[in-house]
Amino acid sequence: MKPKRQHEEPELFRSRLDQILNPRHPLYILANQIDWSVFEKEFGATYVDEIGRPGNPVRLMVGLHYLKYTFNESDESVMARFVENPYWQYFCGFEYFQHESPIDSSSLTRFRKRVGPSGFETLFKETVETAKRGRHLTKSHLNKVNIDTTVQEKAIAFPTDARLYHKMRNALVRAARARDIKLRQTYTRVSKKTLIQQGRYSHARQLKRARKATKRLKTMLGCVYRDILRKTNDFDDELKELMSMADRLLKQKKDDKNKLYSIHAPEVECISKGKVHKRYEFGCKVGMATTSRDNWIVAIHAVHGNPYDGHTLPDSLERVKEYTGWSAKEAHVDLGYRGHLYQGETLVNIVDFRHIKRATRAVRKWFKRRAAIEPVFGHLKSDNRMSKNYLKGTHGDEINVFLCACGFNLRKLLAVFLCLIRKMLLFNKFDNFCYSTVYM
Image 1 (cartoon, rainbow, N blue to C red):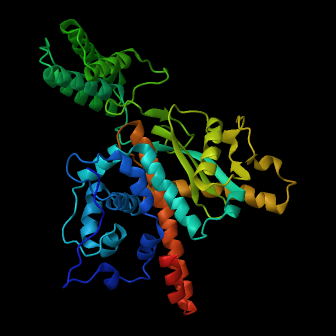
Image 2: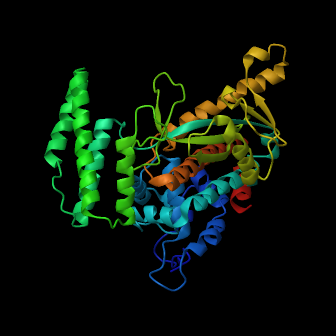
Image 3: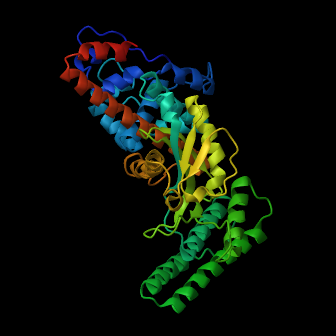
């Protein structure tokens, strides 16, 4: 059933939150700047009209996701802090202080499944629109943009052949037991012991023994795989996918492309970005565009298939126009975008300092500003939950990317409001400022 409107009955002996809280607090101002009605119109179609209990309020679910990625919290910790923080409750649309959590943390997972990547794209668009309404992001910011890619790592263990063989065999044994397929031998205890031995041999640099242990693990996986093939021909979708993954794992070689790196996250790709401290990263590539002047994130998207950086450029520039309503005049990119196939109205500058010695000071200034996108990636990973993606599947990759960008832009808005408050207090003009921001 569709969610009911988030309205509480007036209480005689309790004070409303807007009468208690400080209207100068940045989170209080931000709560009144966001157009929450956009989400109710967008997500209303995902709910059924008459069947079941009423859904959770849309503003509550959207606000919790905003707070989670703005302040780098998990599903459980964001609910714990919600009960303690009246500003968070006001941000999520409550009129009176809540002494208990209104929902369980698992409701956030179900909301993500219900809304999908397109819904969280709407959340990101609204952060851009909020910045535009306050004139903090203007068309002049799109004169110069920086574009680059990074890797969003998946929350998986470092893939080794021995561990993959062991986990794949475990998954096949569990699936066979659930379907009453009697296996000749499961190798449960033998495989675990062999995996431990393989790790010890590798740590001691006894590589010949480690290779033999890995080969034994592969043999055990092959025995279970062939045993299931002999015992049944009627595969359901889940078992068929597991058997396909096992076959792919048994056949893949060291130098193959599109290898399997995780059993529970088969979409993971191995990406090498040339970093000295981390040669390989396992996840998906992320393309991002930021304004060169103030580092607002104006476009972001998850890209699967590990494409060449230059091939992601047209999509990034199209998203800039889609999310902001304005086209970028100039885009600055690094040498990884050489040979791109973009044909559009934006001028693409490939930053190469070997060939700009005769350029003017202004050109060199904007070329140097291209590097400003790198700390944005750092903040996204350290402050906004992009360092490890815990959401499942390719949809989880896209959802996490949009929410990380939402968290970054909201942190910038909070910082802008804080600076404006201090400036207005300095000139004793806060009352006019507060009225214009809250009631505009």
